[in-house]
Image (cartoon, rainbow, N blue to C red; front, side):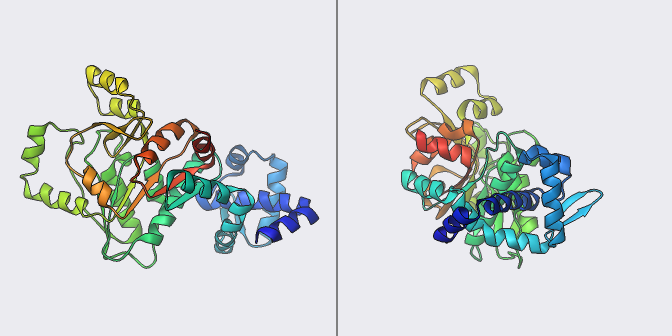
Length: 339
């Protein structure tokens, strides 16, 4: 396929440029759903005239519907994008980035989407879609899937779907809530993923950060103990990656603890554990939920994070060595390889 793309690029370069533009439009509609033209101009960086011409072409070939409320992709357009995606990733160089990332960090698989999620919301949605598709592909009947909170995982929850329904599977949160926006909490994301895939779910209604005394007391509660046992049996763990300081502040960490965290060189946070640049755990927050041994024994650990500013944090968690798959964006991927 690579040779075919190269021959086409040499013989009809103007045709390849049109292909790239029209694929980008269809891909954007696939991720974003029905969208107005003005929003597409801003997201894709095309001129209004160029976008209008290409949308008219796609409409004539039955790939999009144009309505007063916006443009949406047809089933045929969706099928075409899904078939073209591997070849387009090769042509755009994303497959090379994926291979280099996997080799650099000893990953089973890397998935890279085009763009920078810090510059465009639709790129974050695309990370979520890619994570949801990978997850759907690796779930086995009876699997328990533990998920963290965060905006990128919330996008994955909105994008994931399954046909037929995953009636034998369970989605569970990795930990309790941070007291933040309910839509970004692990409980909500686990519930949304279950509903969109036809699976079952269990929720953990406890705070994320607990004293040792409170931890011991809660573990005596049968309802809490039962959910925690389900969480710890997870074969698949899907987690985000955060900046250490920001996550510590979200957990209302005391000033002296935050200072100690910085003195220890904490750079990244995942699943309540804080890592320095070399991937060493320098701090952990006691909680009811997934523990380090549970993380290390899970068969599929999928890290989902993007954005150019997160490259250092992503690298720190990957150097820890217990994430098997990375789903990220092009901006983070390139910086990861230059670290």
